[in-house]
Image (cartoon, rainbow, N blue to C red; front, side):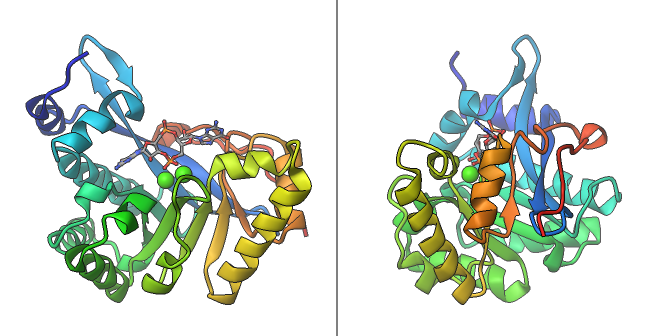
Length: 254
Ligand code: C2E
Ligand code: CA
Ligand code: CA
């Protein structure tokens, strides 16, 4: 399937992109702290497309900025409507969306939805730090100064650099699901040491760690054993449309 920039921008204009939400859970008391917004494309003639079917193309042509902005506005609107649990809503931001205009676009979305910066978490991946320039650094710093919380996504996968924790005052560090899976795999003892060290480092910096890809109670127990405070995954709920988010299997660990 060939997807052009015009297809993506047209899809945004026609409101074909829809947002599903997945809860983020606090392990100690089982509270839902917020939801992550995950985009899908309801493309006529093609069904519901998952991100891996269109994000690479959208990123390659910079049309991703239109998608990310539309998702942010939708997520803030849904949060403002009171139909999402928790105190915050997270959105993903591609490296190519992080530019000098990002703080202004976020400010506009907050104003348009009547929300304050404190309810928004912007998730960025290591690509942002790998492509770091004075412009991208300044954009992230401005978001933080506005009171928006920035999360490092997929930490522990790829080429995550520890120095990014020095450069950017992250509020969240999301442990990649591969790393969470290793907590109960063949090399579990070593994986636990790694996760424990990451968590200690993050906690010392006031950064809350989220374990992603939590599918089993064994994952939950392993994260809890290593003092990781937050978790997200199919065990608690698959991403679903706003009215259909129905978290399950949530219990207090403390
Ligand atoms: P991500 O930000 O790391 O989001 C988590 C992905 O893992 C989601 O896939 C989610 O459905 C899936 N997932 C959640 N829990 C589990 C689990 O327990 N097990 C497994 N195996 N997977 C789980 P999804 O929705 O297909 O999104 C894939 C990626 O697409 C996201 O990874 C994110 O990088 C990107 N993405 C999604 N929405 C947006 C968006 O609005 N803007 C941008 N720029 N990227 C987005
Ligand atoms: Ca994410
Ligand atoms: Ca992730």
